[in-house]
Every structure is written in C-alpha cells, then in structure tokens.
Image 1 (cartoon, one colour):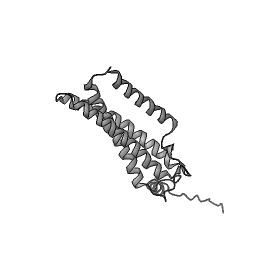
Image 2 (cartoon, one colour):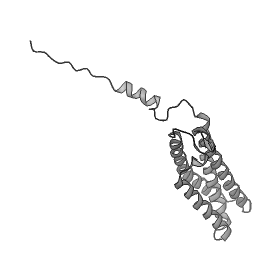
Image 3 (spheres, helix red, strand yellow):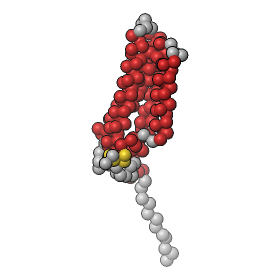
Image 4 (cartoon, rainbow, N blue to C red):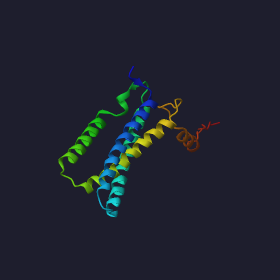
Length: 166
C-alpha cells in the first residue's frame, strides 16, 4: 500500500529536496532584504552554493544509485537511508536553533541560507531530472551500454593454436 517504484522514489526525493531548498532560499532572501547592498555577501552566497552544491550533488548521485538498485517496490520514505534522515534532522534542528537563538547576525543568515538553499534546490532538480530520464527497461544490474561497447572494442578474443610435432 505504501510501496512505490524506484522512479517514484526519485520524484519524492526531488520534491523534498526542492521544497527544502526553496524554503531555505526564501529565508536567505528575506534576510538580504533587511540589509544594505553588499557584494561581498553575494560572493559569500556563491561560495556557499559551490561548496554545498558539490556535496549535495554527490549525495543525490549516491541516493539515485541506491534507489535504482532496488529490485522491488519500496516504502515511499526509502528515498533516504537512515544516515541521511539523521543528517537532515541535525541540519534542520541546528538551523532553526541558530535562527531562534539570535546567536548569528542577519548577514550570516542572508549569505549562508541563500547559498545553502540554492544548493539544496539544485540537488532537488537533479533528482527530478533522474526521475524524468528513468527508464523502466533499465536493468539495474546490467553494465551500461557505453561500458559494454568499450569492453567489446578493447578486449579481443585470443585464439591459441597448439603446434603439433610431425
């Protein structure tokens, strides 16, 4: 009843990451609106985006590979593994706690949340792209076609002949 196909898990993951990213991005933009224009902060947002996008895209690739390896439909919450749920809970709790405590200045929220939100949303888009390009005919255990082609062209069968003494 709660089980879904691999392709659907990719869509769920994409929606969750995209929704989270857009919400974090929204908080960063709201914080920017309270500040005077500061190009150094914009650069900071870009740096944060680059750092986290690299990490989140690797994570999305890892999860896509894991999801594609499922042989049977899975529970809809299996788009993450337990470790990822724990990381998400710590990040959300930490972010909410930092904002609520007032320990970090508004400029930090502006540049950090904007870069982080864009990176999360980018990973969401990557999951959705994987959902859109997913093929049910793909055999999750097969060697990709381009690797098979390379193997066929580089590995030539050798035939050994035995010399016979006359």
